[in-house]
Image 1 (cartoon, rainbow, N blue to C red):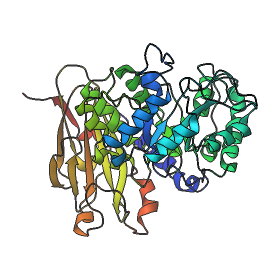
Image 2 (cartoon, helix red, strand yellow):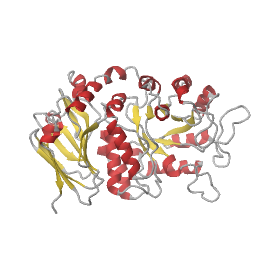
Image 3 (cartoon, rainbow, N blue to C red):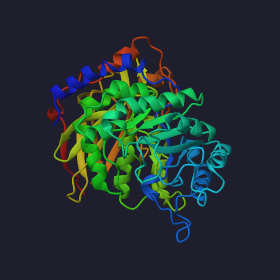
Image 4 (cartoon, rainbow, N blue to C red):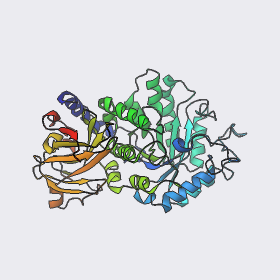
Length: 462
């Protein structure tokens, strides 16, 4: 159970968000978390295009994924980046010292691939490493920072991921901002994804997140995701146990990145897939799918294209949610979202069941004890089942049945927003311009009492 002390600490930490937002990287990008497709977790460093032409890292693969992002409706719900990861390069630079792609797997060149992606109305991302080599042993950027930034601009790149293998973490405080400077000097807007903090954390160095936010649009701060529920659970634990340090760093233009979505691959059940997607929305995380879009099953595709949960992820306030309850295998995660009426937020709430006892758990709690105190009440909807609970008051009790390793995700929208027709339900594109609302949003957990008084957990009666 996480009680009043932790909640007060987080409320105080939130008070730093607005000043820091004005000092973060201002390349005009990542005002909401980026959405797209990334090759690494699903396709890794498969370079054998002779024996496995359908799955090797090649221009053909990225062209196919670009086609499917559009034709299968992913672009229509917000996924816009097609991101190349490691293993696309030749093993050596060209005669002029410039990066070059593998000539057999990318015979048309990276600018041609970028043009193909752009012609689909999408954006093109690339990978490099702040080291002598990339993690897979291809040329790194050390000694070539300015030249490589210019190469990426020549390739019409829109997104750059910079890894940190084969480098000294102590040098990253200088090197990552330096490369970001050269990216900006090209004059081409390129979103900048950094692995800077995670390598320093591994080395026992305390990352300077003020500097990181000033140089990067998003950053990794924990382990690479693997195709398993165990991997997801370690990320959940990290983000819950370190939320006081993590949450204040997130906001428009600068996001924590817990790594790729693995929904639709081999390692997660349907319930676990729903849990990953819901939590990534609560955390205001980048939504970067790493899945074979040619073979994904319809149920998993529906998770990734859930417009209502995507709207939570893309909420314009950009406040990362946090865990407000943990006990007996049940966790509750909450995120304040628009619309805001005076000092009262709307909320997205996830009830997560990490129990493995084989039967759904019934969770009941009085809304007021979730911090839901808007006197006009809240319109409540389940974002997976579309169940409409109607208007509930702060003193009403909400009861949900949560499957093992699954979740229930509810949206509580302040009822006054409907009465005043401020924002259509399910949309977060407009914020009520009440002048008192934005400063008050930083105090959203200061009113939390202990959930222990009212929260009930039990096995569902069949």
